[in-house]
Length: 194
Image 1 (cartoon, helix red, strand yellow):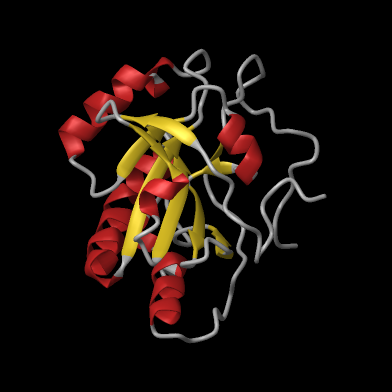
Image 2 (tube, one colour):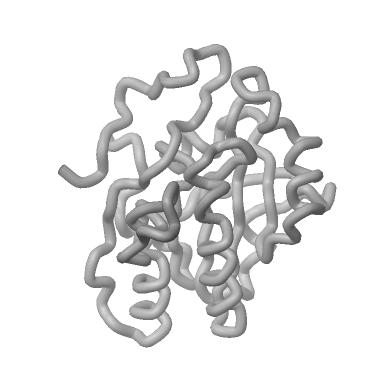
């Protein structure tokens, strides 16, 4: 069995607290046509440098039935900047157009098979996975971005076209697992595309 969700898999449910102090589960988004769940954090340079690109994509598709949800699964013991309080502060400073959920137990990161920050998952109305991988081809250096996979997928999906590339490797820092070295990844985790 693959570590990361496979195309066509059902979105695992969750019950996580957001920076607005409310608890959300998958059913709270039943009225949303397309759901983008992405694993992110506060400290990673790949996240920080590409957040504005993600914001532009979220804003572009917000009136087309697409909802974005960020999930921070990083251990605050690896990077204190990834604590819940720091998440709240970051949302207050940047006012991102997505919910920002805290996966303190890291259980949701394991269920989805999150590899890196950022790592994107796009689900259709039936919550079947239609894309997973990177947002853009150069998240650490946005001035060098030549491919926006996330935008392409959303455009193809809402226009009822086949997803031309449903799988890419996420580009970023690995998820920071509790009690592990900051570079550790689960042994069953691997690249999605060879």
